[in-house]
Length: 213
Image (cartoon, rainbow, N blue to C red; front, side, top):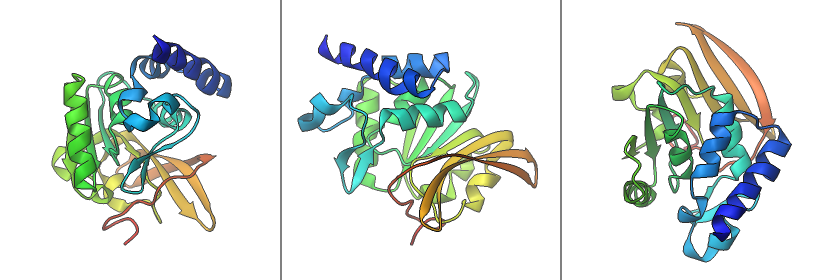
C-alpha cells in the first residue's frame, strides 16, 4: 500500500530524525491514515512535512507539530483530553489512540460536522466533537489532564488554565511581539502554573472570546 509506505517514511524521517522518541506517539502516528483527513485533491501530499489547506482558511498541521504537541502533553492512557481546534479531525484521531477520551472543539461549524462524520466513519469511539468557541474551553467536561490548542492565542486563555487538573498540561501557541511560541503550561497547584517555551511555530489565529476578536 503506497500510503502505508509513505506513512512509515513520515515517521522515520520527519519524526524520529527530528527527536520525537515517544513510542506511543510514534505508534499512533504510524497507525492514523492522514490521507483520509485531507481534501481528495491533496491525498498524494498527505504525508509530506507540511501543513495543508482544508478549507475555510484553516489547515491540517504538519505531522511533526502534531507529534511534538502530543509528546509535550505527556499523555497517559487514562487521560481525559481537550483539543481546541478540531479542523479535519486528524490530531484528535492521533490523540484518541493515546488517551481514554478526547473532547474536541471547532469554532467553524461546517468543519466540526465534517470532522465528526469522518471520525465516526473511521470508527473512533472515544472522540466527541463540539461546534463552539474553544477559547473558553468546555467547562461542563472539565477538568482535563491535558489541553492542546491548535491555533495561536494573543494571551493564554484564563478559562483553559482553570480547566486543567492539578498536574495538567496545556500546550498552546502564543503570539508575543512578532513570534509565535509553542508553550507548555503545567498546573502545579490551584493558583500556581509553570511555563516552558518549546518551539517557534506558525498556526492560524485562535478566534473567540478569549482569543482574537
